[in-house]
Image (tube, rainbow, N blue to C red; front, side, top):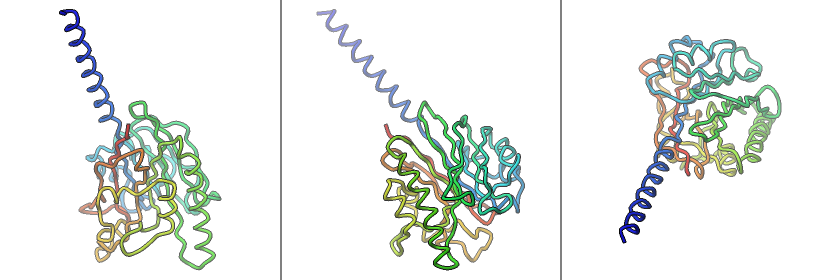
Length: 271
């Protein structure tokens, strides 16, 4: 009888220990991702931008319109994010408008994903957090506005990238962050580009956070009269079936350092 009782106690102890271990792992499998279009560091240096973001302790920052060369390494050094990926092609062929990634954890399998051509691309890198592999995409989408031909070209590029992501949704845990150049679907408007992502299982963090984008803005940060005009075009996207957003916001700075505002989301991997 004593032996049976002892075995029961050991079983309950091991079960409890295993349960606590699983909970601990789940709590640690999270990633705090930011996206920031820095307007080719026109209004602030890499060091100044790093200091402005440092207190938020991001795990990954996806920059768009970042200068080439050592710029991302310099801002990463200030942030303690010393693993760097710099895109191969500058957006729209302009000078110093690269998509880059700065990460706390090592980056590997770095590549440039073409959105039909080299004028618009996504810089991709993989990282591991608590043995969970995550694919990070730093993006800066085109904006079709001049005429129908330009709109059609933009649509083709966005669809090309969405198709690339769709092929990988069955095996890839993806976080897509940056300047998407579109306002997400809301009660007053439908956006076809946003719908493309929803159709493959990805969505913006604002929905789960309960943030009404029509009352905020991420673009024209330096124009005070545009504050809160609904121009939220910078996003963090993820698959809600695979990850849960537990925190996030649009950063309102006392003095903005770019024509865009940084955005961020804390994502927890579902087990």
